[in-house]
Amino acid sequence: PNPKTRLLMWYHLFYLQDGNDIPSSVVMGPSPVNAGPITPGGSQYLGQELDLVASYKLTARTNLLFGYSHFWAGSWFTTNPTPPPFAGDADFFYTQLTVNF
Image 1 (cartoon, rainbow, N blue to C red):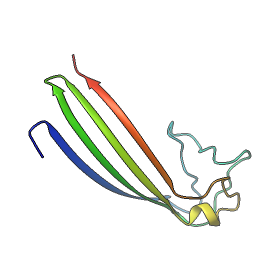
Image 2: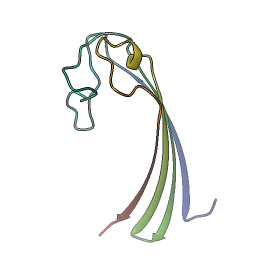
Image 3: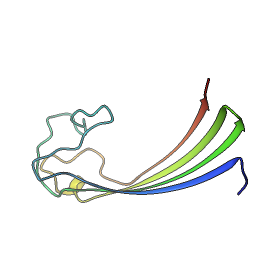
């Protein structure tokens, strides 16, 4: 829209490598999707995500970023032998301030 504003859109598809895998958490360990151990099995399709990001350059070294994401849950959440407690879609918003020095 202008030299200080940047708009981005990403679209992701998430699949497990094979039927013996389990999803990883944000710290790259087994995902704690339920209270007990996670059993491999079910569909390999985890879901899809759309990310919309707007960043604004406040100064030469400072950026402000606003983001929105929607995750459409895949069939893994309903076909896994130990289904997670929540298997629906998810929406989240976030902001980020970046200062480079």
